Amino acid sequence: MPLSRSPSPVPGGGWASPGLTNNLSPSGRSSPTKAYAGANGTPVMWERQKNMGGAAYQSFSTQNQGFFSRHMRRISRSLPRFKADNSHGAEREKIGQGRWNMPRLGRIRGITGRMSRRTKMLLALGLLFLLGYILFYSTPLVYYYRRTSWLGGGQKFVIILAANVGGGVMEWKGAREWAIERDSIRNKKKYVAKWGYDLEIVDMSTKKRYAHEWRESWEKVDFVRSTLRKYPKAEWVWWLDLNTFIMEPSKSLQDHIFDRIEDVTYRDINEYNPLNISHPPADPYLDELSQSPIGDGNPNSIHLMLSQDCSGFNLGSFFMRRGTWTDHLLDVWWDPVAYEQKHMEWEHKEQDALEQLYTAQPWIRKSTAFLPQRMINSFPTGACSEKGNDPRIHYDQKDRDFLVNMAGCEWGRDCWGEMYNFRELSYHLNRSLWERFKEDLLCWIWFKLTGKKVKF
View 1: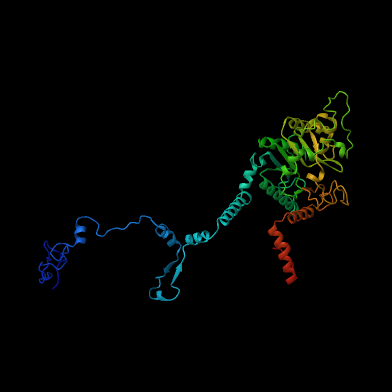
View 2 (view 1 turned 30 degrees about the horizontal axis):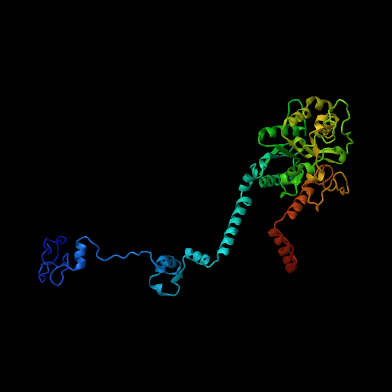
């Protein structure tokens, strides 16, 4: 019969709706009672235990005793597990729907567990070495740790690169001039990033920079002074002209010069004196130190380092050290009176001015030292000599000279051609083992097989 409402139980058993009560049951209910009785009418033990609030079953807890009990979980983790794929319903019985899956952690533990103690130590050392190499040689971290005074001391050095940003008022830059500037700047940026130095790119374009005079190319003096002011932690500044290229970026300035400055410099200009300057000065009123050909002989008193080419001082690459002596030299070097009187006579401008100061002022000689030209300022073929075979001046690939200065290339030589050739040569000489393998072996094999030259 249809029900007008949902059936509900009544106290004592049975249902409120007629027709739903089971009359065959002596208790008058169709649902089971709350407790099951035993043979004598009493609840069974497990039911009585449950009604009393106790545990229905006796629990088992391991005491972690015995070899198997201690290692059972570890062993089970390393065992493969069967992974069934039930996503396809009836097709789950097909081959490939389930597979044995070994946990990754178990695999690793299994592999390392079969290794000997010595193998584990070697593997750990190898991983530690690889991690250290990546952190300190393949990440920007190398720049910062090489700048610190107790690891590299890179913050003591600033490279000043003379650029010609935007061209000058007399002539705009063409494609070759832009390419030279791009390669030169990139070369210096990579070098300072490798060794933790600072790079200051200054604008040497031809323009009226000062109210009363042009001072073209004399800006070196002003830029050195402003750079020392901008970098208070810098001890040395290294001036480089734009037409220079660092050929050996794997050499730091410390290893190349400053850790052995006493051995690589000479203070007696008579060792190489293309200007025939009389040295030491013989004036009787000078003190003993000023009359000495090598000054005091102390490398700590050196504040200016430069090289000489076939015609005298060359300021395409030179070093200056922070100090009172340097401040005085910059003051007299920038003297506007000397500039007004002599700038029309000095063909090489600020370079000739420094030569005049060195000749006339004995106090300048005491703190000036010279480096062999090929150590910081090698010339390419055609500079100072058409043959280019002077072992004192010109670049030698066998000796792996540190830097090339394409001085005077704008006067009848190809500046971009020289820059390109030395850039490619520097890359070839400083290739890594992997680059040598690719370019020397793989390219050679490919050429033998196909007859075509390729570059990986």
